[in-house]
Image (tube, one colour):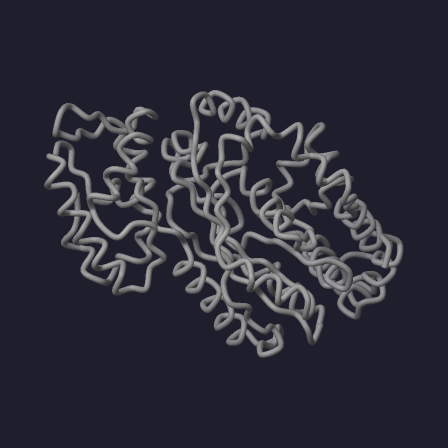
Length: 377
């Protein structure tokens, strides 16, 4: 199914036909013009050989990140059996690079990525539109013409491609896993493919490249130009090194959920979000951030982390280390080098409180309601 065929399929869908006939409150000519405009915006092409070659010019940033995939066998089995939707948390602009490369490293066919429209300006926008095959998402629009077109386009796109989406609707500025926006999941289920599965996916970094930027703002107050964000990312990339864990969960069969039933969509959203939360890798930097006080000895810090590890283990968390000592040994260098903490002999001091809180909140969903309230800074 080529792009022209996808366009024709979209225009033939019942919900689009109803809108074109005046169901959205516009005249037929106005509705047709609006849908044609949005279809042109959404149209994308994936050129796989060029897509793979992108790794070479991106090597200067990719070499700073050690990719650590977990449970990729779930994806291989799902891809062989049918169509796949990957639903991932969103930590960094690097997610768009790292997660597809992890799939490619393991011989998994590349999905189309749903990305914010702010990433489609300039040269990067051309790469997204004509190489990687990303589709631009207007996350905050309420235009009914756009919403009906987007949902129909996604449903038809799934007849040909897998889809990688970020249900939070954007990066987390606070560190926590945000509430989901269900529009794209709802659209995907409207494809009515009997072989459609959703693979919960979690991405975690020892250090997020934009940590200072995100922690300073905490709440997204507006869409900034990507070129400005890119300039800030380049600044914080100096000396940057991190592992990146990409963990895949057991596929969820979409056929058990009715997209027209609100209760089913709530159940599906909750199930995917809970699975994502359990898959999220609890890295040493998050443990230190959650346990540190303004000034604390190493021994006390290790003991406080041990308490949290017990809580996390009982919650079924995906732990990277088993002891407070191992966490402190692994996290001290990265956090001190980045200027987030200061180590003076045996004493640890907070230097960037907002950044530490950002990392601490990445595991809040596992500690909250499990005794975490008494384990505060």
